[in-house]
Length: 153
Image (cartoon, rainbow, N blue to C red; front, side, top):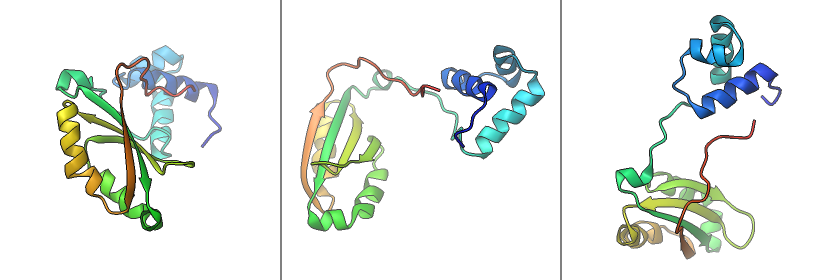
């Protein structure tokens, strides 16, 4: 669904900023009455435009101070089994995001850990033990300049 009308775009912008808004609050912000607003939100959810509503947690305030990006290159056998690697990393709660890439590496992973020692344990005990891995290059993020979940709708 890419044909969003202006009201639907307003709904999505507001919910991306604060998904805890009540239907009445949302309706007021976008200039609709509550019933039509609720029907639009319901339709956006049913059609998968709104995948889910969540609370965004500050990783540092829950003790996850290390933020790492890992580039993973698979060997020829591993590339033949991309699904196997994909399923395995989905089981690691430390991996927040995983992308299949075109180019010199096969995957980019965004990983969090308590600290570098915890990442080292994750690296040696879990990530590097996955079959088909040829190389892993880890880059530690020093500071966060921008972080958002808000899409430019």
